[in-house]
Image (cartoon, rainbow, N blue to C red; front, side, top):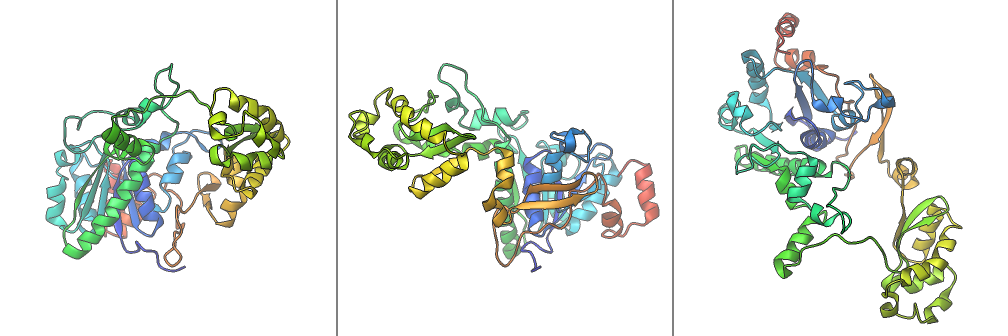
Length: 403
């Protein structure tokens, strides 16, 4: 396999949960040697996050942890004791990047702040990921996915108009922050290579969400230019557009407005274009017309599978897509053809299928090198192999609870 673009790069990973580990995963997947530092005994809280393999809770079977920490090496280190901090500084002396997700002020309180690290390694890039940033009035506030989505995101406009706002599902805010942090780190590494000085990066989940392309930026621009505030709206669609049932599920076909003539041809009833209800876009925009068209439209869809509806729509140049469940996504021929899924063997769970490369590089590829580490799995490889500690030193550190 050709060399990866981040080969030779050493990253110290002091992150937990999702945003930070996703940042360092992206770096690891493209060749960086990421050394994940966890607390002795308990490790990253993500180890206790569902879903678990075969629904059996275990710190080595968490799906999110196994996904977010592939290609990393893992050690345990107690930074609250002097010996742990000394070992960490030894690692930091030759590292290229430190990514951390502690609350602001925690690392400086341990004597591991930016200035202390810069004094031993001026080229070190330090990326800090936090809820609200390293300063400002919200700096020390606690947060969660829904809090960040509400404060910095489009939650005000999601949900039904007669109900309270709703958060969309998943942990999108944290994954977005991780991706932004990885991109920012790569930019800072380029600068460090040119100047010999490492940058200090401040990545805030709230700032990332406020600038998110997931509706928020367009909403903010709309307000800035027109004063319009997006409101929650009753779900619905124009004739030929939106989600509809079909023989084996649901399909989303964008066949309204200017594409409506294509839709009626697809269902074999072009004569509907001469009917008063459907003759032009003004007529089709009137209340109740969408339901009238569904009397023709849904029976046609119910005769076809979601895959068939998808292919028919595309054949008539109508944007469309089946509403996939997870099994559909895993089995989709397009993903299979483009080698998206990663199939791995992990000591704790056996064979796994996980999301693979997020984009394709033809000369410097993404690669799977190792599964997510067990807690403290690489203590000996890193402390003895990198720092020169002896097996006796390792045993002593373990006995003292340092690792």
